[in-house]
Amino acid sequence: MSGPPTALAADLAELLQLVPVQRAGIALLLAAVGLPVVGVVIVGLDIMPVRFAMMHVALLGIAVGLLTGLDPMLCALVACALGGAGVAPLARTPDGLSGAMGLLMSLAIAAALLLLAVSGVNAAGAFALLWGSILAVGTADLVVVAVLAVLVPALFWWRRRDLALLLYDRELALSSGVAVERLTLLLLVLVAVAVAGAIKLTGALLVDALTLLPALAARRLGTSLTSITLWAVGIGITVNVTGFLIALSLDWPPGPVLVLTAGAVVLAVHLVPERRTTSWRAPAAASLPSSH
Amino acid sequence: MERNQGADRPDGPGPLGIRMRGVACRHGRVDAVRAVDLDVEPGSRVALTGTNGSGKTTLLRAVLGLHRGAGGEIRVGGRSARTPAEWAWRRRACAWIPQKPATGRFPLGGGELLDSSGAPAQAREAAAALGVGDLADRALHTLSGGQLQRMYLARAVGCVAAGAGVLLADEPTAALDFAGQEEAADVLLGLPATLVVVTHDRTLAERCDRVLEMAAGSLRERV
Image (cartoon, rainbow over all chains, first blue to last red; front, side, top):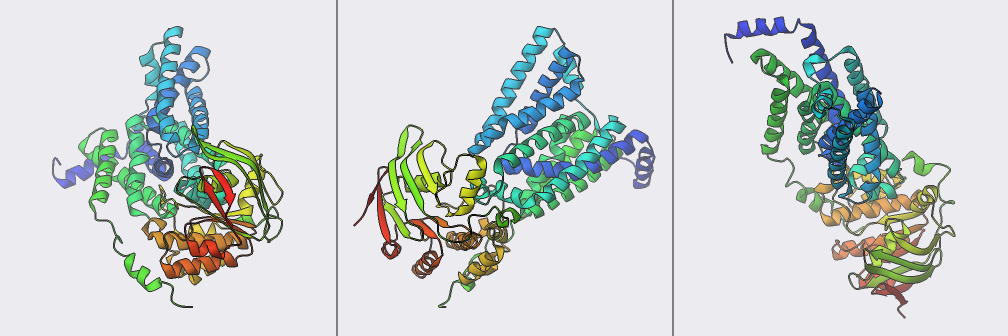
């Protein structure tokens, strides 16, 4: 840290008066409500490469947009939604989805590059459309994160019982009457669109800090889907506020600082010894069926 | 879960019959089950025995539509299953105790498992009777194999209470101690449902009405 604390606080207060900084702060807070829930689903479905897959699918969408004259970002979101829906049938086998994400990534980048080459569009220019920055968040972007912040937790709460069964074991969910295929499809489309939208809002790197990392830390701390999700949102908010303030006060780029802060939390959580590892023997002995 | 208790439940509580004709299942290029014909009377208790890898588990999973690429015809309560709605009915009609209860990629609470039966109160009552009532607050991955098996048994009791007419139990006593095996057998055999139980437990098999033996994917009656 540089300078005396009072000067630092004054600097920070001054920075927080700036409109882009305020918008970025609000966007991060809103994102911390919706995106960690998406991250819990990503970890639960074991589709961690989804961010890479969606980057490439979005590029394909942008290429289609540039070629047809439609809004490239809209095409990107539609392409991601279709990509998410397209891999849903592969969820039937336990590792079908994680493999499918790799396949989707390769196919999408190949199709995008081919399309860009054939149409003569500059690939770097297309990629640039995909990159957002948290300090350049516009009003429309804020509305999108706000909608996600309401929609995602609401959907989660509405379907939390089915979701808990599905993320635990697909076959148990099937035999419990959960509409597994429909729910998987809905989740994959939601994850795809949320991740693609978040890339546009915050940049690709920051998406991990907002989705995956809080969920990874929370998975270690919670014992049920609901508690894991609450932990994830709590960690998301804490990390975003802390990381953003650190980045502002040191005048560092927010993206890497936020990712490093979230990463530090994940590491710290994994270094803490796990609770209740030895406790099952005691209640087991007490609850053994007596003669009755 | 609310949908399990709606008007769409199996035709009232009561045991259902099972009929299989020419059922065949493949795991890749391996024939796991070949040309199985079987009639199980409503309310009867059938033990399915046989060496490891003889196709018992695959046959049970085929009834639930969990084994893809199963051929032949399976009817439960006189109904076949082709459309998603028919499969949904089938899975409500058939309670299931899986052989290897998944330890899960994600934590699930014991209470959530019991509630998924469709009759939370009865499932929790059964869990209490089986000595695992106080484990409802615990995550399933923190339970021992025997405790988990008792929880799944309690869930099956709930499924039957919610209207299932068949119980497909896949080695439901394998992880239990001797006292536990007897107790579990009492629960299984006392349910108002048709029972098909895969087991290597001789005592349980002897208490069933019929004992079938599977060998290399084929089924034969043991007399």
